[in-house]
Image (cartoon, rainbow, N blue to C red; front, top):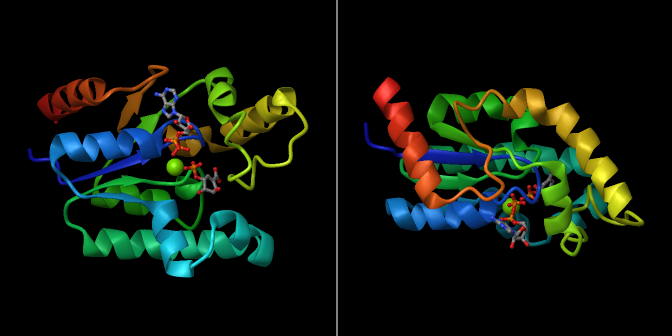
Length: 176
Ligand SMILES: Nc1ncnc2c1ncn2[C@@H]1O[C@H](COP(=O)(O)OP(=O)(O)O)[C@@H](O)[C@H]1O
Ligand SMILES: O=C(O)C1=C[C@@H](OP(=O)(O)O)[C@@H](O)[C@H](O)C1
Ligand SMILES: [Mg+2]
């Protein structure tokens, strides 16, 4: 089986964007980051969109741009946003059109990574300290886990590598 579309899902800070780029290079597939595509289409940042229009508007744009990308790209590595699988039946689109990988990174590791990168993420911005960030991430993960867990592939290593994904894919394809 040839891999043609791979989708990365998971919490903010899980490494979807970072690992997605590396996987696209390794597999010689085009890479797209869903947030970047929304920002390009809207001509403003995710934070500005949340501020001016609210989360519901962002979720509508996210769902629409996801469907456009999937329609346009028969070959693709796509880094989704952390909330993508949890809104507007997006998880069904992912499961039906490609292979989805959940990067299952533990909350304390997410806190380490996001402490200085939370401001660009409106749902995590303006929290007073790391304890508040940890609490927000734990609540969010609890609400989202039921979606994330539906992915057929899961990497639970704190740092998921290209090699680990190649191994997961080989095992998955051998059992398919
Ligand atoms: N495997 C990793 N180990 C350590 N830091 C990482 C790792 N992957 C990503 N990061 C860092 O964590 C932050 C979030 O990474 P990013 O790829 O944007 O995650 P996501 O797209 O899932 O929100 C960035 O600062 C990035 O440099
Ligand atoms: O978790 C979320 O709901 C969000 C995560 C962000 O993407 P990352 O997971 O790449 O940070 C971005 O889509 C937006 O800020 C909302
Ligand atoms: Mg990202």
